[in-house]
Amino acid sequence: MDMEALMAQAAELQNKVAAAQEKLAQTTVKGIAENGACIVDMTGKYDLLNITINPSVLSAGADAVASIVMAAIQDAKSKADVLIDKVMGEATAGVPMPQ
Image (cartoon, rainbow, N blue to C red):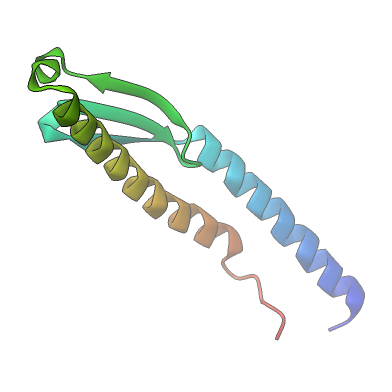
């Protein structure tokens, strides 16, 4: 493979990855804990957009609220991880890697 073809492939991959990152920034996942007691909206780039806490949870105390919020964030992160794997896999599919 000549250097020009390799540079063209690298540029194509860079464009696809940039487009995939933009898609991740525009895509939202929801993390849910305790049957909806806390809902977290997060982008595919792990940016937190919103946290909604059911007011009935607040009477459980600060530690319980913190635990529920953390569970919702972890759920959102897990969903974002799956999304990232899918989107980035699609972006790099079929691009031969140099050996």
